[in-house]
Image (cartoon, rainbow, N blue to C red; front, top):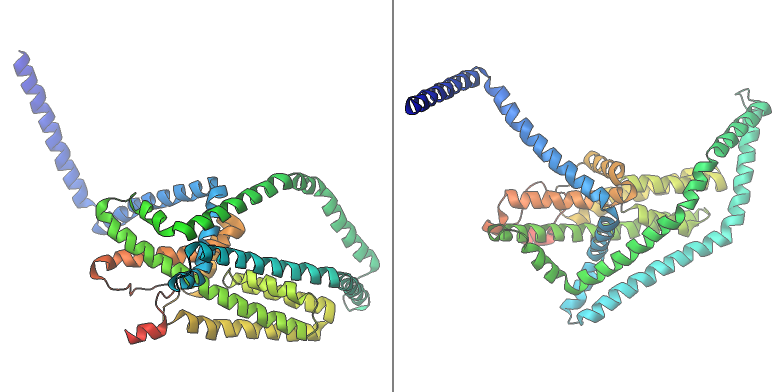
Length: 396
């Protein structure tokens, strides 16, 4: 009886399985092909989006480690051309590290000293001119065609004062949190400095250790893609450094010649803002024009605007194409979206690192997609930044 029961159950299971296969086949046949393709893409897209979401969440949770690491990598990319030049000319590595780090600190310290010196020297004059400009604007509102009385202006000022008073508790809580924020900044600065020294001292060894995390078959592809991405980041950093310097000199010199106050702080601000493509140039240029408007009046502000637009046009149409070579860059709209997305996710650090990260990811994807580690050919796809200068590429 037991054997017959087992055979009966087995036959029943086989019948159910066969029936399920028939129903599945009939159901699959009745589903349109386009819906099958859309479903296949959809679940794969959901898996990729989930992986990206988890990665972003981990980065946010570990931001006190990730941000110093990215800062150290970007500074290493900025110093790499001069550092590699010293190594090629047989300068000892330890001496090259000392020259690179100490020279950078000296330049930054000098710029900060100039900024503080000019702010302390010109701040009383700027404050007085700002007060005079505000009073002049008040008189214009009172005597202008807008039919505004002193009562209206006083009411607006009272409303603004009440708003500030309502936010006093928030400001105090932020002031109390400055201690921990400064502690985080100091810790991050020390960590970034240590990582920078490690990258300059033994970057190749760190990369070889990183490659051991990949399977043996994937190591050639990972090695080639990583090196191509690093070359791209170095070229991006080098070009942005040169462009930022030219922008700062052009706008700062224009402000000084026009008599706009705080020309050196404006130049330093333009230099720092140039590392955030498009958005940084617009914001820092607006600051320069605003200072000229408040301190010097509308005509000087108009000439300051002409200087800012001229420098930015020189950057966009001459410097960037000449320095980047014949590479196909991403559209400015895409750059704005990448910067905006980075700012939404991680604030100022996100806006700063968005473009180099996008460039690195793009080059790595093109390198792997074209299997360049097997063919030995350079990636020829739609690269964001050039990895080969135009003159060298033309000769090859």
